[in-house]
Length: 170
Ligand SMILES: [Zn+2]
Image (cartoon, rainbow, N blue to C red):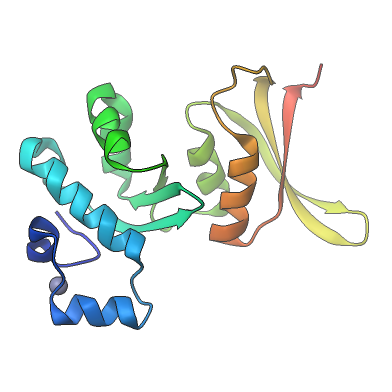
């Protein structure tokens, strides 16, 4: 497994001086450290994630945005058990995103498994650029994704202002 901190540190829930230094300098966050320890822990009982690569974990108000390799995300999405195992270990909702992806892909990942029909830049009054995402279907109280959280995560992680619209507005 490739993690933001050393594998040894993650397995033993400690930080070596080098990793400690990275946290102090801000190169790594507490969320990076916590997520690394959680993944190493899951790997103890689940060999499936032995070859996973965690690039980073960012926390925004109890939301944990995990940047993983594309294949790793696919594995998690294909296994309810694995997804549960991940979700149960974090003290908030987890969001899986691909590392180094485009803004468009980032937004699509946050909405998974809901389909995004389009993502376009739009100009809001006052000449402010916004990004509008159109989600397929219509919003119901059962819609599983908190759109307000998506807006906040995109703002915090990408510094993008997005507007979310549903295909069927009624
Ligand atoms: Zn270390």
